[in-house]
Length: 129
Image (cartoon, rainbow, N blue to C red):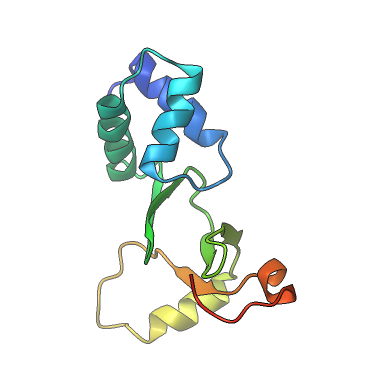
């Protein structure tokens, strides 16, 4: 575990109060707004360490990588507007999925469902972004 530096605490504060699943560039801008003295390289390095320590979740999608502080849920990404939202699945659902890969040693589940969100499906949508 990394020692708690002021910069690490400040970056963690920003990401823990962010509910938009930012990519690293967006997160860096949010940190810079609140703490102008923290450089982009420090944000990148710190976020990677927070992911490694299991404090921040890395969400890999077809459009890029995003980050989330809260890790007790899964994600849905709209293929039209790109919005990522939280979804909560019961342990029964996850166990059913995992039962199909029982010969593998599962360490972490990072599930991202992709489709068209309710808001976009109301509009005249006829293609992927």
